[in-house]
Structure formats: structure tokens, C-alpha cells
Length: 515
Image (tube, rainbow, N blue to C red; front, side, top):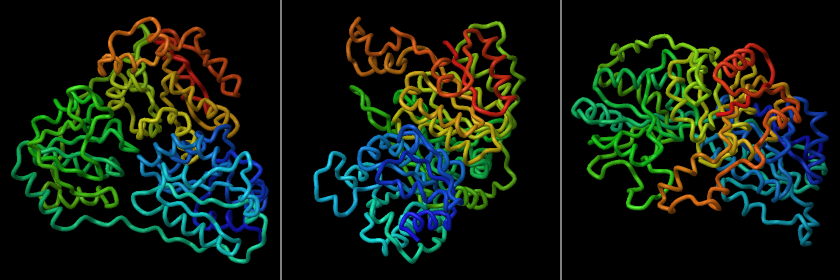
């Protein structure tokens, strides 16, 4: 058994069934072993940022880690932005990075680098395999690190000669740890606070935006009047008709301050204290009032859903139910211009049951996302760490994790270009993904940020740095060039017709929605 066989067999033994990869010379024995260890599926990605983003999407939907295989330090460097998003999402990932042979490392070869130093930017669990005999144990240790609640990126650096040398022992099965309950004191304190305070809020984060957690939060809201918010960086949100509707903490600090300004108590459930994305002139970094007392019901490592259910019981709110939403049926926007609002309406009407939405709508999100509360039941996978280029790779991972569910990638045109190679993987793997490109042909969010940061007016030269024209990006041609059938919609009627067709058929599709 070679080291590569050992590595793959240990992954398979621990239910790691998919490896998103972009290999090079130092990983060729790993690639060769895929034909001998068929329990692990290799998925080729044309850019390492697609590998890391796909592993993130897979973990968010499957609840189990995928592996990535990357080529030396530069390969890892290319993957860092979506590993950053995965770290903020607390996604479990086992990332294998090839290294030069042990004898070659003393030479400053062109691809030599400090791989561990690259990895420390996104992971605090990094192991370098020292010998073939240590490999199985090292793989099991990396898996154990990745699946520690709430999840982390574990990196394993494997010199090329260890992949081809013989070894006798595969790694052990790693048993998944259970999330722990918070202390009884935390539960009693939260219940007392909710019973006594008329200006309390709860912020849900991490895994506490599941349907189970939302049901408990809805009962608490109905029984005590507590306001319930979603952390903007929650990795997966249950949404749609039948779900208790929570308020998402607004993006801009002024709006967030207005939303949270009346609170005297704030309870965190797997969530951090809210902070704004950026610092602005004369604006506090946190929208939480200084007079608001902040307490923790459940840390990210603990079971937030079970904690909420325990508070429901302590408050005697088991039978309380929030009032049903009396939503009138939405009409399709057939005779209107194509706007983000029209796209939101169309999604609300035509979204298939149990779809998965990979959301990287950026400047269009405020118009689109409220409509999704009135759509069929679905899950949303938001942009967690703010590093753009997540939407298409996360959709790839989600589609491989849940092949029976339709995936919708809502993608801004500027951020799509960061990881457009994901379309090729969608086509090669015949993934059931409908990509909607919101083409306003501009970094629209930066128009807003330019004004907010006080960076003076936008002159002609500054405007060129925000404009995506000259030439316009042709997403129909780009998609077709990578094997994905594509159409362009310039009116709401065209978009509605094309989206209806796309969700009724299996396989990858792309619609360029020109706003």
C-alpha cells in the first residue's frame, strides 16, 4: 500500500467521499490512487478557489467534510479567499497540500514556499507528514480537527515521496463529537431575562438557523415578544413559507443601529456580537447600543437549537406560536422592466420546493431577499466572510452534496468573474444548477461605499475603476464556452420565461439578467 492509497482509504473510512482538486506534479500518486480507492470521488476544478469554495458549500449542506487537493504553496495561495469564507462559515474541510519530496526541500526550487505560513491565514490546524509510517495517523488527526464543533479547516502537508513510498497502516475511524448543551445557568438566565424584559433581542448564528431552531425561536417570540435576528454571516438559513421569519441584521451600520437601538438586552445563540463590515468616519463599529447588556446562551461550539428548546420549556412556551403570515399570492412581473425587484418576485413564485440558493447578490440583495420569505421552502447559503467569488463554487459543492435538490446560484456579475471556472465543473459533472447573473455591469456596491467613506465625488478616472464596461462582459458566450447552456434576459417577461424553463429541466443552465 502506497502512502497515497493510505491517505485515500483513511478519508473513505471516515465518510469523506469527495475531493475537490487541482493537482500538480507532487500530487500525481494521489491522483493515480483514485482508480484503486473508488470510494472517494475526485472532482476536478480549474482554479483552486473553486476547490475551497466547493468544499465549503458541500460541508454547509452535508454536515460532513469534503477534502481538497492543492498543489504546493501557490495552489494553496489561490484557494485562500474562499477558505477565508469557509472559516467564517465554520465549515469542516480537510485540505491536502502537496509538497516537494523531503530530499528536494533543501533546494530553493521555483515552487518552493512556506506552505504552513500560507495556511495559518485560514487554519490553526496544520500538520506536515514526516514519514510514511506517520501518514495514517496524521490523516485521522486532521479529520478529528476538522470535525470539532463548530467545524474548522484542517490542513495536511504531504511531501511527494511519502505518497509513493510503502506504508502498512491506514488511519483510524474518528468518531464525530456531539455538540454540548450550554450550562443550566445560561438557560435559566436567558429564560428569566425573556420573561422580565420588554426590550430583548436574540441573534441566531452558526447552525442555529435550522428549521428546528427557528421553530423554537418563533415560540419564544410569540410568548415573550423577544425580537429575533439572524447574524449576517450565518452559513445556512432555512427560509420560505412555513418558516418563522427573522430579521437579518442590516448591512449598513446606520440601519443596523436603528434596528438594534431600542434593545436593552441581547442574547447571542452561536453568534458573535454584531459589528459592521467596515469602519466609517464618525460611525461606531458595533451597532449594539452601549446601554444594551449582551449575554451568551450558546457559543458556536454548543448546540444552539437544543438550547433554544430548553429556554422554550423553561418559559412554558411549548404551545405558543407566532401569528401566521397572511401573504397574498404574488403575481409574476410580466409587464415590468427587469429589475432586482422583478427577479425577487419571479423567484418567490417559481422557486422549486427544497431548492438551495447560493447567494452572492451583493448590491441587489436588499431588493431580492425579502421576497424569498414568501417562496417555497428552501435553504440559503449566504456570503459569510465577505471575500467575493464564493457564489458559484459554493453552488458546485451544494449540488454535489444534495444531487436531488435544485440549486440556484444568484450571482453578481463582478464577483462572478473571480471564480467563473466553476461553470466548467458544473458542466463536466452535469450538476443541477441554475445560475442567474445579475448584470448591472458595474461594481454597484462600491458606488455606495465611495460615498459612505467620504472619498469625495466620483470623477471620470475613479468611475473607470467601478465600471465593468468597455467591453461589456458577455456571460452567455462565457458560459457556452465552458459547456453551460445560456440565455440572456432584458425584460421581466423574458426572465420569467427563461427561469421557468431552467428550473423545469435538469442540468446546468445560466441566465444573464441585464439590469
